[in-house]
Image (cartoon, rainbow over all chains, first blue to last red; front, top):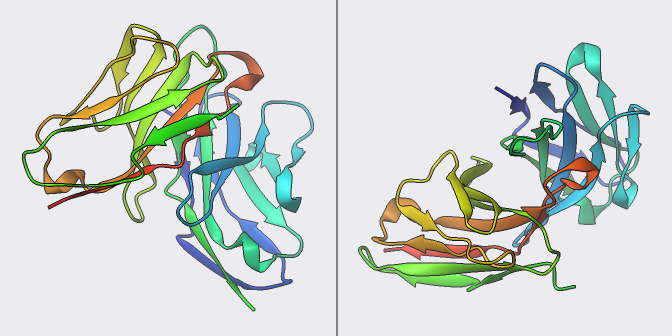
Length: 116
Length: 114
């Protein structure tokens, strides 16, 4: 069965500092990988996704993520954090659809706190 | 496109009451999902549907029911509300295959059972 681990419950950074949020997955093959962001009181919004090809993926709002097969990781990064990036971030993994049902698995989320 | 819409945004129920959370999408997505989100617990899948007339249980289905009579609508029914069902509920939808299977989420319904 697929699973996702986000080891950090909370991350605190200063505005302008760099950011890396960790995500590790467990799956028997190359999965589909996603990062979503949830601003306070809002639903989840897709930041970026990886299916195949270039292992460095660019997303919206200046975020990027790198797929590392050897480490089963898909960490999210941003070179300079803005106060508006304060939110909950979710990593998700899903099997490539092969005629069966597509049900992604979400991590528990990492809460990002940005200090001025 | 309105995307995924949910109503109501907030609701307070008494123990034992019933209600239906509405969810609709206008993107012609085959797949629809209901999640609940509790603090620090991430998203838990309640039910999902792969198309009109087809539904299946997720991780935490007890106390809930769903139906999918049309592609657009996927209501979630709580029959006998319990305090343990206090949560934020999210509806989502996606295409079924290919690279389009990212999920689109509604804004959520915050439910309190007292």
